[in-house]
Image (tube, rainbow, N blue to C red; front, side):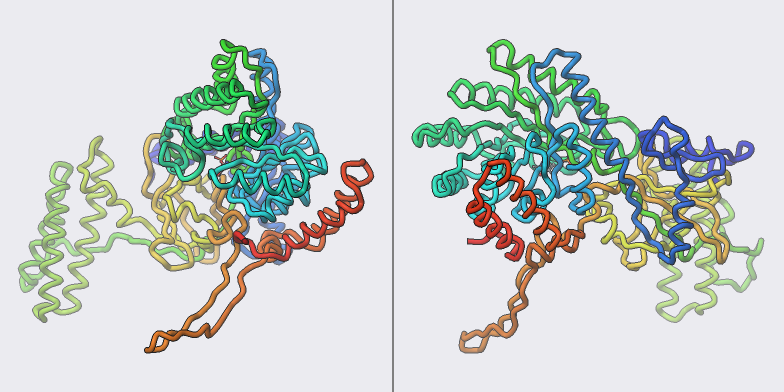
Amino acid sequence: MNKAGILGRWTKEKSEELYGIKNWGAGYFSISDKGEVLVNPYKDNKESAISIMDIISGIRERGLDMPVLLRFENILDSQISYLNNSFAEAIKNLGYKNVYRGVYPIKVNQQQQVVEEVTKFGERYHHGLEVGSKAELIAALSVMRDREACIICNGYKDEEFIDLGLYAIKMGFKLFFVIEMPGELDIVLERSRELNIEPNIGVRIKLSAKAGGHWTESGGDRSLFGLNMSEVINLVDTLKEKNMLNSLKLLHYHLGSQIPNIRDIRSAVFEAVRVYAELVKEGAPMGYLDLGGGLAVDYDGSNTNYMNSRNYTVEEYCTDIVEAVMTTLDPSNVPHPVIITESGRTIVAYYSVLVFNVLDVASFEEYDLPDTLDDNTHEQIKNLFDVYKNINLKNIQECYNDALYYRDIIRDMFKHGNISLRERAFSEKIFWNIIHQIAREKTKLKNPPPDLREIEIAIADIYYCNFSVFQSLPDSWAIDQLFPIMPIHRLLELPKNNAVIADITCDCDGIIDKFIDLHDVRNTLPVHEVNNGDDYYLGVFLVGAYQETLGDLHNLFGDTNVVSIRISPDGHYDFVREIEGDSVADVLSYVEFDPKDMLVSFREIAEDAVREGYITPKDRKEIMKAYQDGIWGYTYYER
Ligand SMILES: *Cc1c(COP(=O)(O)O)cnc(C)c1O
């Protein structure tokens, strides 16, 4: 029994505390008086809260089955507003003399619905898009209409990518090519000369500042992307030589995602702004400072610098950034730049909830054992039984060691034919009762022995659930990311059981046995008893960022071409089979973009550009060709 349950009747407040929903829910999630989880995109407005259970029964009535990923669009809108308003507030309060222009990195959730919603709703804030591949740029151009918003092009860029970007600039879009590798500059300059379109160039730098956390490999001197300081100087010199320094307008860095500590964020800003000021001194027009991603989500609700949390609020993040930029630039009278962040996680994490039902439960109950054993019981089984009879608070570690010792001896005896299957089965019952007993005693200890830390997992119930960790929670599987998980109903009842969650892949990597906790990580999740035939639903929350895209669609790269090769003994070889990989259209349709609709939509946008005098009808023809070639082309780097 869970501790909280011992005292009196179970209430909604007890569930709130047990599952920490007020800590991680950010006002979007709460518990109703009926004991069901409510979702509310409008936070304070109580009227707009709806029960997830009602949604689920609606879904069931329509004949759809679990698992289901619920997406709450307005939460996306709310988060965009929240971030933009927080920056606006900081800018106003501190007297910063420029604006914030966020961009949403498409890779964080590439669903057409998300990208479209971000640009549509974000238009009032001129919230733009960040793209890391050609496919993402093509996706961005099908939805972007706001010419005040930025389009930031990161990642490797081939000619096709660059040409499309240049055409977008010609059509009046604020698009920047961020140079991440020294070699990229030449292609950008060459293509812009060829097409006679002036590029906007940004440069991604490697900072010496590094941040702690799971996802922060992008920072530091050895980070894979970005230019080091001597490469930056080379870039400036090349631009000067070619009389193109006027194109250098943006400085970018990306420390990594989910940065839990505000100090790391601040020290990176200080370092980057110094570089920015130096580039202005070199004569570059600049004007844009792009601080990348990293704004973290408080998944466990602890508000600490633990990797699943963050020790700052969105407001503090904005204030600290604006302040750091000002204090660094003001002494040298450098004008304040437009501040860009590429915040993805914060925008989309809250918006999706994965709901699944429990299919089956395996529980490890205690066995009924006799008080005494027959005299003819085997000596070693008697020894094990003695351990069982003598457990107390003081000797649990010793009993644990003894139990393992005798269990192993008994197993060996079985292997050698010295005891029967019945005897072995009986000894296992004793063993499991010992483990139960130890686990019970352990809860009374303030500092339990380290060996016994995970003993709960051994006797936890297993709740078999209708979903796949690999498909739906790849980060839980790959990097032990914790997400809030809880029942979405029956929250006025005491959750009597402690369980681990197994998915239907029946793979041991498909087991979740780490759960959020305010002070630590919990090994089991308190859950309700499931009677045969009852529906019991669990929700995994805050899964909107990075979870919805399968690993092999990262950045909208699809399947690669497959070629099977047969090699003969004489070293001769044949291609026996070729399988063509995904086109951009394929991978975009996987995330529900319709290539035909995109073409229609982009054709209209290009026509608008003609009407408004950005391009000629002849330009339009070329641009349309580039866009079409892109759609039907391969998703990978093309020469
Ligand atoms: C992944 C990524 C982001 C998004 O970071 P979040 O922490 O999710 O906001 C931003 N910029 C770049 C370059 C990225 O690779």
